[in-house]
Image (cartoon, rainbow, N blue to C red; front, side, top):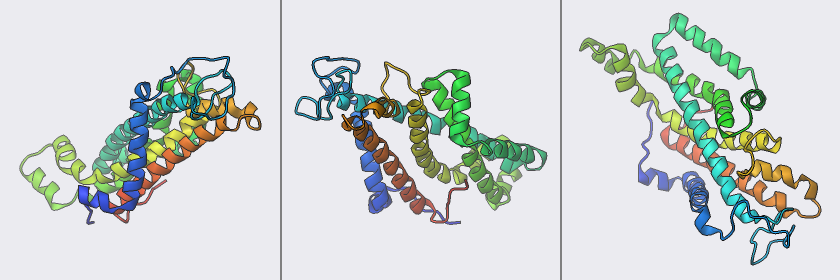
Length: 281
């Protein structure tokens, strides 16, 4: 199966990659430079400016405690993007290892790993996240573990299929002929040839992870104070939808833009690398 290459030219030619990547880069820069962009501290409360609408002093207004919404959006981006990146990385690591072993070994080992995949797939990701977060206690670590356990089967299934299609090719047989062991064949010869789908899955998983993290935080089981989270901001804004709609509008827009950007990026990368790649879940 022919694959494209991730060259600068190919990336810039793809409109989905350029739009999605640009939006994502902007959010990352804003999150990283948050202390230098906003003059307000994350936890600063100003009881003389409660529920102020957007103005020159507070671009996105203030909340019920007088906290600057723009500041909380920036710091909330840190939490959401960090959780999403951590979950995608851990899910990818677990899935790649399991997929490589299952696809290359076959037989009983493959059946055991396939059974594990089916077990984890039988649980909706949000439900699995709820169970694990309750067991592990709310927080960034719990969210990353919960999301990664919900999405590693995607990586494992894709990598397994790719390995099965590659394990009997000539370059693998040549490696065996010169005495390469199974570990070397897997990680030196097969993995570089099957890793392309992981790049696509990584960006899509980050989009899912942001939604799951926001959902858990909305329920009070995600990022805990004093850290800021878009989901927590939405939860706090429920009582003020009519009186102060900006409390829910801005974090909602931030979540939507980030998820759309990641999905555009993933779709664009998929088109570049292989137009036949599709989500297996």
